[in-house]
Image (cartoon, rainbow, N blue to C red):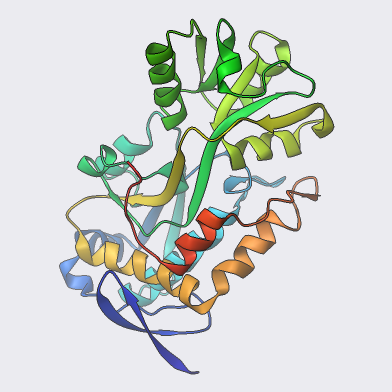
Length: 303
């Protein structure tokens, strides 16, 4: 097994080009999170239920996806660092509304979903190295008069409650005095049902998640993603603040995947090949923003 040296947040680490791509040297005894995991023999992972293709249930109710594949690499490293061979993984579903509080109160050790790294959120939780970058756009019915955000004036739009998209949409509405009626739904499924019902003209969310909703719908060709991105969202895993050793471990694994190139294999698996449950190809090529995130790993918030 050949060892290679990579840099993560200014710390030299030694890792393998196989597996997780990095064996981050951490002081497990100095990490409250790793100490608790070792003592209990359990790690609590927050996941999403329908964020295709990042974190969602397959036909047997197993959590799968791009985020989960990366998360599994982290779990393997936690098992190694804590020396808990039979480490139990407790999967906890989270929503946009409760995900931060569940990390803060200790219910979840690591949230592996589709959470945007924001400076405001960094006051509450810590974020890992960015593993994906998305743009906020609109899902509309093909042939809709809504083709960009300026077409939303006087119309109704739905988005998921507690998301960056909701905040941006409300700010846009206020600044442009656009008279947009904003509906907030609990999750992607409910937002799409509202869009399908005709009660709103568009569904605003991150482009890759909208592509997921479209791809998994009964008639994908009826829907299209439109509009210039109103923001770019840096996705990271969330964990509790003030535990630098645990963050070092998580960042080391993710950065190792990027340095070794394994992250591109994981990306190709979920975005360029048929995926469960319908075995449909997302056909979502890697963007320049995602490529840059892989080439220059970091945990900076975009805003």
